[in-house]
Amino acid sequence: MEDTKLIAKKRDLQGSSNSRRLRRTGNIPGVIYGEGKEATAIQLNTHAFEQLLHHHTSENVILEIAVEGEGDVSVLVKDVQHHPVTSELIHVDLLKVDANRPIHVEIALELVGESAGAKIGGSLEHVMHSIMVECLPGNLVESFEIDVTNLQIGDSLHVADLNLGPKFKLLADDDAIIVGVSEPRVETEEEVAEGAVAAEPEVVSKKKTEEA
Image (cartoon, rainbow, N blue to C red):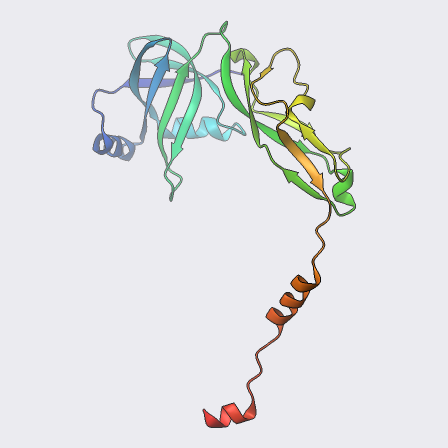
């Protein structure tokens, strides 16, 4: 994955009020932590950071940060917090990484293809949407593609069925289900009857109308 460099300035003032003031000036507060050292409070240009994320399908990105007074530092975007209503970026956590030391990271599982079972009426159920793995920073990917083309009704894929190659070590239960195809759901006579009653329009008699 290609490295992208941003400029990070250190910040002395912390707290929610100072963070809001920082965001109003076009910057996003954050922290850099790792390597057993105390976390460093920083600020990044919000627009530059947003542009970087727009070029990736996930927020699992390795960055080359130019930290004020420290020089270049390689970091993994560990957590990005968004405002629950406006989706505005409000905070970012960055983890220092060493090119020669494995990292633990959650990577998205993307389903590709149309399953044979779904084509004949089965229901495709995507149970696990991401998976924790161990890998070197340079081997980080944004997602793993899971081909579901050959899945018939009653079939399922488990973590043990994944073949991610020697660059990735799975950190999940082998028996956990990733995706499966279930039988088509058949409505019972009671459900059909209830649906018919619910769909039936209310009839107002002439007598009730005259009384009103």
